[in-house]
Structures are given as C-alpha cells and as structure tokens.
Length: 127
Image (cartoon, rainbow, N blue to C red; front, side, top):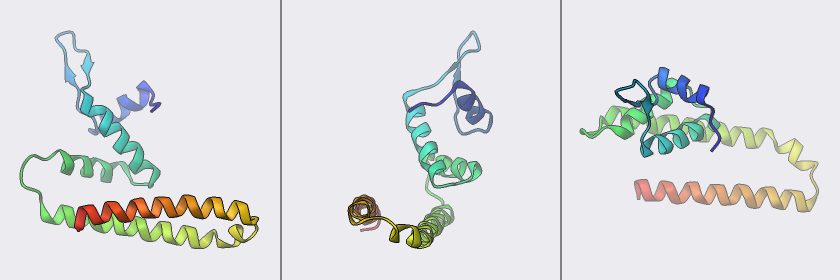
C-alpha cells in the first residue's frame, strides 16, 4: 500500500482516520488505521464517495447495536455498485469481441475468479 502523507492528512481532516495525539501534538495511528486505509482504497476503486466511505467505516467501528436502516442502505449501495459493474461489463462487449481467443480466456478467467469470490463472500455474510 502506497499512500502519501498528504492523503493521510486529508483523510484525517475529513474524519476518516482518527489519530491519537501525543503530548508533543504528534499524530499517532494504530494498527487499525492500516485496515481502514485498505478499506478506503477498496471503496475508492468502487467509485464510492468519501462521505459514504466515512459512513461505512463508522458503521463498522460501531460497538453499539447496529442501526438496521444503515445496514440496509449499505446493502442497497452494494447492490447498485454490482449493477453498475454488470452494466460496465456489458458496455465492454464490443471491445471484448475484438480480442483473440487467448486474450478473452484470460479476462473471462479473471472475472470469473472475482465473481466467485464475491459470491462466496455474499454466502458467508447472508448464508
């Protein structure tokens, strides 16, 4: 993971990261920050806005009872993203038709693996 100090400062300013301040006023980030940064980067690859990312992180960090409405909204957002990805793949069809057989096979295998991983994750969460 290669994230600049400037990006970390920006995420901190936006409330995505919450460092502990030392007596000298230095910011200290815990191990959980690395996991949060990975999550942020993952959500960014899905084109999720920072406010939605912040909301998701807040929900994941919540030690209290989970707000059912927030969970449902988050699931709806995931469904929208999945539909968007499906449409993107469909829109790529003319381009894919121009690939040779070996190139198509590589892409199909890659997408199939990602699809199976997604399906397994959904089964674990909701199964």
